[in-house]
Image 1 (spheres, helix red, strand yellow):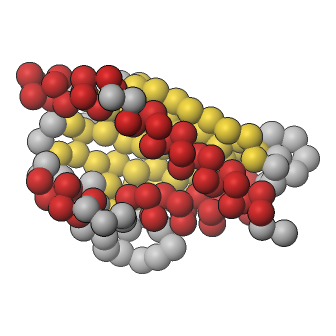
Image 2 (cartoon, rainbow, N blue to C red):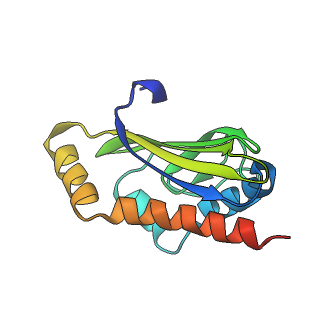
Length: 152
């Protein structure tokens, strides 16, 4: 299923007091660390993720994988798109960096996903009702902002 046909799930954003080129390496680092934490490979295998392990070049480029995700777009300073699927869902996480004035940028994270069948619907309910997805995404954005603003 193409990314543009996946239903929009949510979007979160933050303003960063630096330009997009300086924020980019922090974005790729935070994404890599977030999805490569201990247990992520086991979870990706448990849900039969299409890409259960870390592979490919680093820093992240098109074709690199993280547990549960494959990088489908990596345009430095602009966009990082992760796509994945497992037995309960097909999904995409799209990070966009945009100029927001002199020395400032906006980082947006958009999630799109489809949850087929009864088990997919239950998975969706658990994912959204727990608030875990939103908390995780907001934490990643805040970490990118903090690290980007600390860099001279």
